[in-house]
Each structure stands twice: as C-alpha cells, then as structure tokens.
Image (cartoon, rainbow, N blue to C red; front, side, top):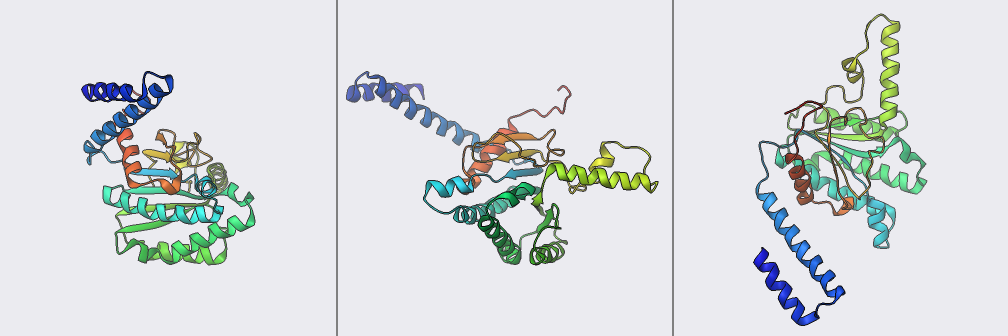
Length: 279
C-alpha cells in the first residue's frame, strides 16, 4: 500500500505540480482508496459466531434524501420502506434474532397531516402485504407502542399479522409504532402503582420495571444503529439501550444497504463489552 501510494503521488505531481489544491485532492483520493481497502479487509473478517442477537435501528434521513432530489418527503418515506425490506432480509440471512425499528414516534404526530397520512398508508400497506414480503421466511412480526391513537384499520392489521406470524421462531421483527421511550416508562410506572395498590408486589427493582415495559420478553439491544448523521437516541428504547453499543452512520436511510449494516456489525465486533466490569 505504501509503495502504491508513493507511485501514485509521484505520477500526480508530474501532472498537477506540488500545488496545495493538488495535495488536497491527492490525499483525499488516497485516503478514500485506503479506507475502501480497509473496509474490504474487515468485511472478510465478519465473525458469524459474533452476530448481535438484537439490533435496533433509528431509520432517519428520508426527508433529507427526498429534498436533495427535489422530491416530496412522502417519496422519501416510500423509498425508505424499500430499504427496510432489504435490511430485514439481510438480518434474517445473517442470523440476527431480534430486529427493532423506529417506524413512528409519539412526537411524529406533530408533523404535517399529509406526511403523517402517508406514513400511516405505508405502514398499512406493509402490514397487509407482510406475508407476501416475507416470502415464507421464518419471521415473526410484533408491534410495540401505544395503539390507542392509531387508526382502527391499522390496529386490526397489527393484530392479524401478529397472530398470523406468532408461530414463527426465526427473526423476531419488532416495529416501534406510536412509540416513545419516556411514555413507555410512564406506562410501566402506572402499572407498578396499580400492582402495589392491589398487593401484587412489595418491592420495586429493575426486573419489576423491565417486566412492565412494551419489550418485557425481548432482550435489550446489543447494537443500536442511527442513520443520517444525527447523534442522539430521540426517545428510542432509552431504558433498554443502557448498555447497547451505538453506531452512527452518515448515510441517509434510503441509501442504507446491507453492506452498511455489515459495517456496523464489524464495528460492534471490534468492541469489548464489559457492562461496567473489567476483562
């Protein structure tokens, strides 16, 4: 690699001279080449025995993706739904056991009605066509979040799909819909208060709280991915992600590919998870 860089640098100088701009362009190209080679090497080392059991994804960037192309935000969401199908399949093929995606937050209701309506339409389409999209794969679909504000037709489809796929024990695909991490904790606290009132519990600990969350029988995420370059959790699985490995990608969600997913997993595999202890 060093010899290659030296040869390219010499050839570049012959053509461009030792200008500052030329150096910047050359270094950028060499860094990109080196980065691509490093990524290629890492991809060959993907450890199939160390795949995260549970991956959670904040699918961000649909609106910006559309704006860059002069399209409506709704078109961005539609393209994002295509990406989601590819990532679900990639997780299934990699042997991921749980995949949780942030589809619609409790705060998203504040968006323009036209955008919210389009999101609900996309969600309804996906639920109606779930069995066809899964193509007979051993995938179970679950939906977490507050269903009270959702349209009745969507609630009906949620119940149908959950029941239809309930026997599957391969990938558990969890859709966070009208979900908010703080509201989830509030609901758990209210449930605990009711249990105390009824004499069902006498002590509150982490397990008591965890068992009253929407994810009560789902393990915490091992890896949490957020696309689009934003560096925050945005009220997503804030209790469950306490010890999750975080991976932030600059790629907008509609452009996120299975190769980007593998890059996130490679990053995860290169970390030591100590959970506050020493190794």
